[in-house]
Length: 274
Length: 251
Image 1 (spheres, one colour):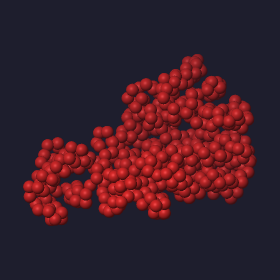
Image 2: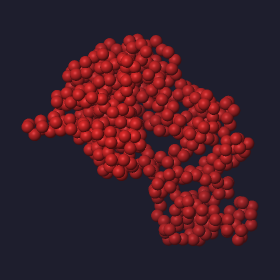
Image 3: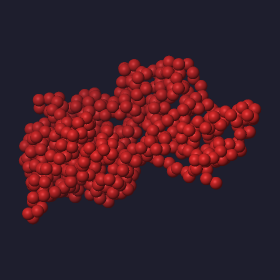
Image 4: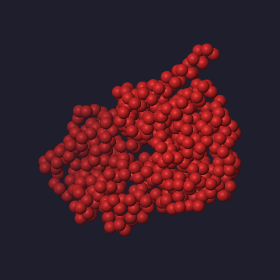
């Protein structure tokens, strides 16, 4: 299954014109919760036509503030109402001093932060009554790290008993930005916990810095890393993230097709021979 | 709480930097990278507010708009986890601090409020539609109103006049904003106080126009007769045509 993010700019192309033909759709619950009118009808049609996964933006698993439980309860209703198969969130924080910041800040890779995040993931999972898939986020600088990213991510997934959303592009971006080996990183991840994969494009803004933009086509080295990765794990849904630059829909459809062909090459063959 | 005070302080320093852009001494960072967080977060906030308030952006000097955004994001405490609701907090923040008065932009609160209400009406949760029939009599039958509307009061008629003119027209102004049933598009129209009175009475009391016509004439201080009937028929017929009135109550 290869999905695409449901953005308002391309909703018509997906739902009416069928120019883009994903197998499932993903949306950010924050962008649709509590909404009525025309956009609610779009969302309802999407739910009628496609399996849905949700990718949260503002749970802020890593921030010092208490979780916004009213939001989590509302979120649970939304996930239940829309028969959401997978709910994922970022291993980051988006809230500081009780103010939402609307972007993903890196959590310090520290033991106390692990303890904090593990506890919060568990409690969120209890309220949502479903497992959370946490995403390895891209980051542009570590902050006050006392361990490696791989130790940080792995221990959280293990102790929180949650799933992992493996963002292959983020691994590529982080490996480039922080000069580590992407395959070595992925090889150390608990791949048996991966419930979902994200693929995306990015933008190199400086000789030694890539920004995870979701606005450009996926580059070949990311496809190669993806193909290498999926051979080491069981089949899971894969999502193409594209947040803007929707002018060339054929190009985006081409990315969906390419991801599918890579999956077919490995997962369907293995499945048939199993 | 598992987090140590030091970790909390570091996280808050990073958050503070992202909001204000003021340099912070943070341990273990890669030099030259921090500014990207401030830039990316500023872009999200700027884009969200710029898109929400196109008339305000066009009306203000660039520096005035930038000041509004910068002050709000560095000093305000955005509470909503849903970024599309941020424009409402932006309006509330500046209205609560009388920013418009301080910046000599007396219409600012009204303009931000009106632009926010267009978003609010477009996106607000669906309200149940009552049963109605299309055929009926504007005077004799109980009218069924589109439930998805709000009437707002403004000090300046920012919805009907160029701001340079609205500025000199302080008073009691009203705007009706409502959502069209099929498309979900938002429509608005200016209302007089008497228009507001009629809609409120007919909608809230669920009475027919014939039952309040004389009362209305008394309130308006005009004679109840043919002239009033014609004016009311024209006004309500217009609301019917524009789908603010959906039809007539099923008897």
